[in-house]
Amino acid sequence: MPNGRGEALFAEDFETGTLAAWSDGIDPTRHRIVTDPKSAQSGSRYLSVIYPAGKDGGWLTRFLPSGFDALYVSAYVRFPARWIGGTKLIALAGSRADDRWSAFGRAGVCPTGADFFNAMLVTEPRGPVRFYTYYPAMAREPDGTTCWGRFGDASETYVPPLTLSPDVWHRVELMVTLNTPGQRNASQRFWIDGVQRGAWSGFSFRDSPILRLNAVQLSFSVSGGASQTQELDMDNIEVRTDRPAGGPTP
Image 1 (spheres, rainbow, N blue to C red):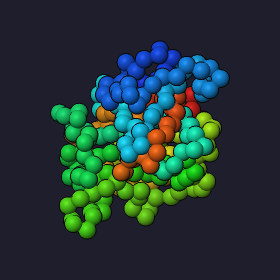
Image 2: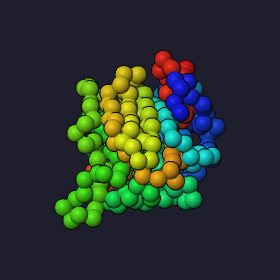
Image 3: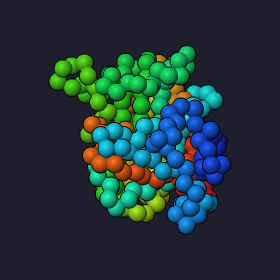
Image 4: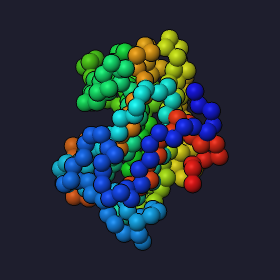
């Protein structure tokens, strides 16, 4: 359970010059490591993600060694001034203990409470940053069978400004705590540059303990694809079992 300290589970600063630490999604045509000490958030390297016109930036997934009931992820992101449109950004995925892939490839699918859930952040460079969540009680589309990620259920709170200024490294953090099966005590929060900007609690991610958090994903999905060829930068990814007391680790 969260304790205000948190065990370190995964860190990626791209200083190795490779993407070997990622389990799935590596695409050399869209993901490249740039060596530029003056431009990196720290160190000398960072990840550049290319969104070809009409397409998106793909994804990078890191599976964790076992399922968790709470996870925290932080990442630095930088959008260029000429960026247009929005994108998914970071996700904590919940799969079945007997199928680590059950939360993937589920866009448009309504969760049952025993098959998967997903907790994501979506953003535009000038705001807003919002939750984007798949969970069992989410509203269905008019056809009654399709679900698209939800920004909340009207009980969530967002505290402006929810913006990411262009050409600046911003730290984005997401903390997810699962509910006890049969109870509505799940929560998720996010921070921008150390200030909590979003909170949502009193709902359910799962009806069965077979679902647990098992992966972090850098998701660069864009509905319909990017309107122009463009790129964003990421650096210093960190995954822990709780948000460090007093804020991010140095």
